[in-house]
Image 1 (cartoon, one colour):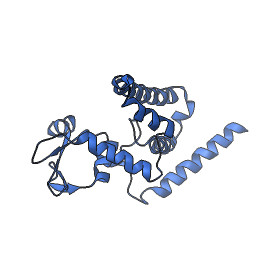
Image 2 (cartoon, one colour):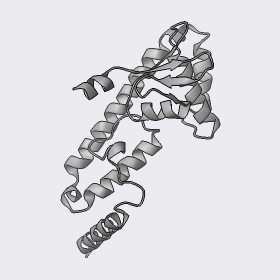
Image 3 (cartoon, rainbow, N blue to C red):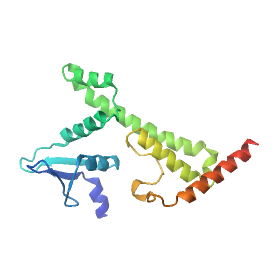
Image 4 (cartoon, rainbow, N blue to C red):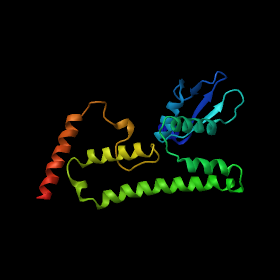
Length: 186
């Protein structure tokens, strides 16, 4: 139960005067990339200034987005960024946060329903080795969407095999699956 309580509340990160970020759960310093990883893993974070107590979460989340965009990991098209800048100077700016939140919620729901539908209508799902193929598909989708939302029943990041572990078994399963699919074609 303690673990569930730990993940229900935001992970508290304190920023020291030196601008270093301190994870209060693990008692160690973290980087922006570490914080991005926590968020990709589904964890909410809250970043506060140690001295003033000011909430700095929004500032750091924007910095994470800006760093990813500047590295060529573009998710936001220029016209969307332009519209965001415009929204700060118009009355439409008051509606933009609700619109964006609703849009992302609809996106997460549609991803989840798509995966459920694929599992329900796909007769291949009963075949041996399908779980490995599904896990690869979910990893691909997660990579393509920047880790937003969850994709159903695939393995969680902490359950993924270590590098190189079970690679031969996965190759064999995929080979077996290909052989069975070839039989259907004949």
